[in-house]
Amino acid sequence: MAGKKGMKGSGGARPNSGPAKGVKYKPRDKGTLSDNIKNGILAAAAKLAKKYGKTIEEAMLELIYDDDTQVSVKASVFKTYLDALVVKASEQKIDVSTKQEGPVVYLPEQRPDPALEVIEGGKNG
Image (cartoon, rainbow, N blue to C red; front, top):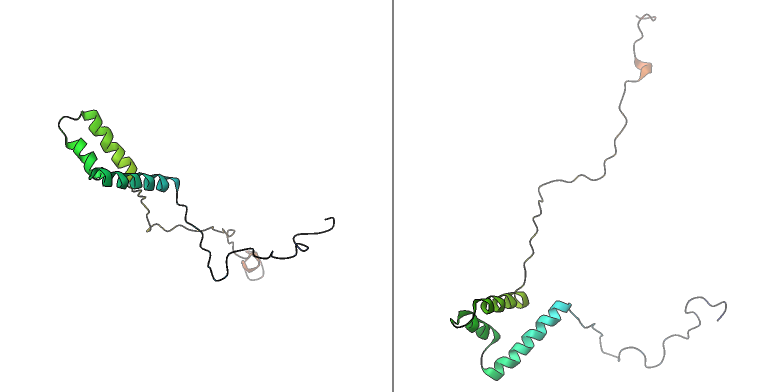
């Protein structure tokens, strides 16, 4: 191993390594953690909707609109529904009309050329 640099002596690709011939590899989109949790909630809700014959939205709304349900339970059910399933919109105000200057190079102050100044008391003065 002494004296070798990089993978020059590796012998190349091994037989039968890599994806199968003719199959294009596409990496799987794993999504974000919040998307995975949301998809899990929706899958469980769909499974229970088949079992009980009502969707999660219908069950939650029944709890919210039921007069016998406590107000605190109604509030928590509604907050849970909003937190889990409703996408939070993020807005940012961007003002495009303002022009931002890039880096500025300042030149030194320009003064008249002293060789071209008229000297008083000279030949012509």
